[in-house]
Length: 556
Image 1 (cartoon, rainbow, N blue to C red):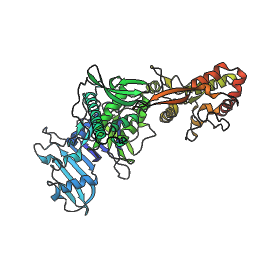
Image 2: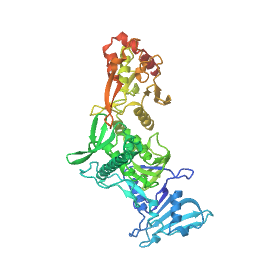
Image 3: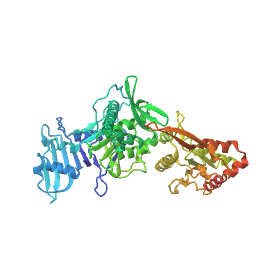
Image 4: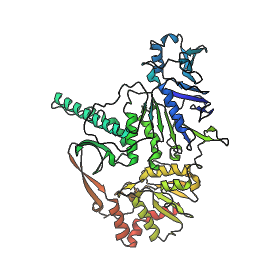
């Protein structure tokens, strides 16, 4: 089911509001973003849709009407036509798969409270009984999965394995609750145990045969792949017993942490994502509601979160479920990755009535200083100067050393790494993706750019050079004469023929999950940078950094 339109009449909060989830051609939009200040009815709308999906009579009599226009899939239409309770109504083909379902709350204690109509191919109106969607075979057509904002991010201790599984055949709509974290933790423990038991059984029955990839982590893989899509360096690793409790362990390089030791943003992604994923196959086509998906997320992740949720419900590049979210976040709204969606802004007019707008102007809701603080741009951007933001930490040191040794006016141009070192000593918000997010952010908030800002990508990017008023996208040139380092800022260095690059490589030992060790050689970029910028004399520095000087002059 997909919702096309909702019309409220005398709603206690939404008044006489009409919500249109179609485009200007009448096509139903796959992703709807409800935005607005607190108290404008975003969450009320989600709750109203969820209540609609539960499809029950209301006993409180009042002067209120609601009309839902929905679009069903061909499979859902087939279900209606084959149902014993409704097949006799479909004597001729339908003009389309669109149904109007009206609720008149002046009528109580009767299924006449609900009216259902569709259009036959000959343009006649088909009137259907209000009981159409109460049967076990037709109720799942309206199924809705609601990820609510009320979440306790700390799971309770789990001591045993239970029988929870994925893809349960639940015909009713589902809504998350405050115990979600514990429920999902138990589910992950249970399905990992089931995967392990099934793999053991397969190995017992196929002695001497190599293990097929399709037999490993059959259930768990659905979740681990989803988590890795948004934090690729932190992986769902294993379940182990600690202090008489079962712990879900994640790994990031050599560091490990339990699920309760993840950041609140990471836990939000794990718990809410798992709730939506757990019955993905048995709930294909279900409507998805998400209230405030940005909760606890850094702006960097807020830019990605809508794509993350959409990918959970995509198959072969097609979105399999309609997703409706309610948000306050400008980072979700102003996102260049948005595809096939529609923003509806709910706000109050001078009379205090709820009205809608398709123009998402967020400057009145999120103070500029709040955005600057969240995105760490206040200390990055300097006034009255060209600000150049770079992918890597060593990029900043190289360029600033070039400014120093070539006598470039420091008050004319400033080079800064876009990332930062967090409280754990790790780099974050860095690299190509961070510049991409900065581009989206600055294009959505151009009033922050009081002077020229240049986003300078490494030469291995596939980005084109572009200019958007004060925002410029520029690419470092490729140094074809440097065969020692083919990418990164190191490629711009002019190194002598006898330069010993082996001095700047480090070797790491990595162990896979089967216990096999491998040696990985990596360039120690910091060691190389410190050697050039700190240890060499100024004349050798000028020889090595000469191409950076040329690029700085081009940027000015």
